[in-house]
Image (tube, rainbow, N blue to C red; front, side, top):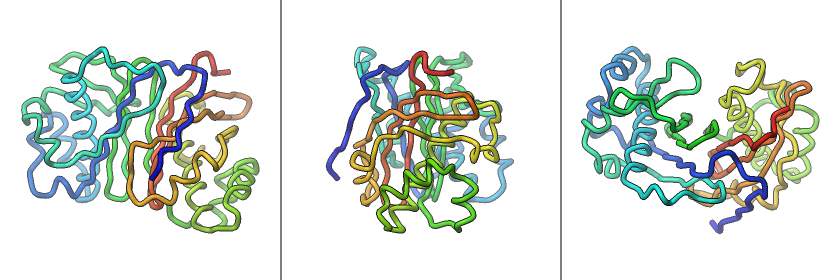
Length: 278
């Protein structure tokens, strides 16, 4: 897939953003509970269902890897323009760091947003987690809150589209889908992922998934920039970066969003712009 990237002129509150993507199948040949803290291991054991456990574990490992890998990088590599860097993780890449190092970094998720604690001290990095379809992901950024969401693109019934998306959003999809059903499903999934990302920023008055139909994504750049992603077969680092508005009742938040994915997945990263919350 050829990169199709456009960066907004307004700076986001933080520039460096790292994303780790890990398929749960990478964890099935080894017991990775040794990479968890005592509290994390207790939480893992309390989860019901093997798939739920695998996705939960993969998300934490992705976040821990991003932190440990960042410690190994030059701190002078801060980017001047916001664009996430994607790392597709494997069991081999996880093995770069020893289990005890993973144990020392804890993902505390008993409140929103989740936090990182390293050797008993809270870290300033902002993290976000998501999972879908046997794939987990994490983002790590500096400064401003940054949220991530991963969704699978699947067809849904007409009532879902009618009740979940505003007239503005439905018209946006209709204009670009050009009657192609799979394309329409993908772009509705994109809007849903952006609503989820906005929810995770903690800005919305009604911070619940049941209130997502009341949120409107508006001003998102056109299909010429985002469109080519939905045809892809592999997730890659060719994020499309653009701006959008998140509306809830009379409130508006200006955000930068980064989008990548495949024909089956949509991955979004969201970052609020300076002075853009009304």
